[in-house]
Amino acid sequence: MKPISRVISMFVGVSISTQIMAQTLPLPSLSIDFDPHSLARIGAQYPDGQNFTFVTGREGRPAVEFHGVHRPGVIKVPNSEKLRFIDGASFDMWIKINGDEGMDGWGNASKTSWIMAFIAKSHDRNGFFFGGNQVLDDSFRKANGNFGTYDQTWVGLACETNKEMRAVKHGNWYRLTAVVSSSRGTFIYINQELITSCPNARPSFVASNEQDLFIGRFKEKWYPLDGAIQDLRIYQVALSAEQVKALL
Image (cartoon, rainbow, N blue to C red; front, side):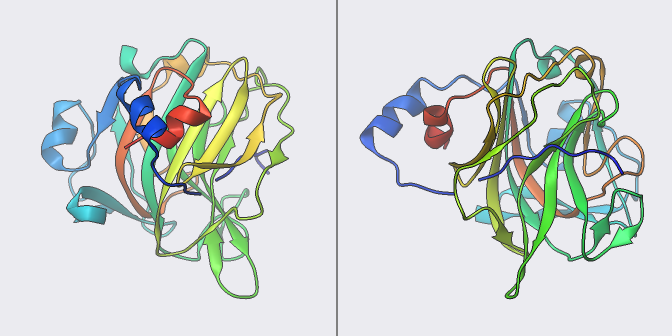
């Protein structure tokens, strides 16, 4: 089974200090909107008839919906300077998980234990991926967020859980923000609140900097998404907790 390292996250109101912080936020190196015109502008590649659908997402924004383990689809964004990182990276997006079935660590369809890759650069053997895994309880099925990598240059992956709330019910949109710092560790936020962190992680971008970006699964068949994604924003810095809260 492929080893997975995890992290997770929820919401607070916008204060005056948050508004001031928003004015000083770094600009994303790449903003990805999921309509054909916007994707063509950044050189994204996907075969005609691929297993995804362009849809209207939250607040009327363009989104793309992938159809899961039995109809896997992918969008490839060719590597560029905008997708290379030195000592930090941040990924901010809106996600909605639709189904209860995904792919397990053996490559099989599963309704009890699975992972879905939202983005992968290029995949966990020579880079990292950012996705969600299923959490089960007695009331409903939920999904959260995690990092995964098989890159042995990443060290110190023990994580700390900061909040009990660490999953979102399937079918609901949630904002997922991942922060990777070679000095501060890895952090995942759901709706701009930190839930879990790996402060001792020391990620390396050496392998991933040579890879393309894949959206909806790995470069190969692994961990296809059954759900929708919109408004992907990529930063070449590791955002602070205050900056994440100030994201608009």
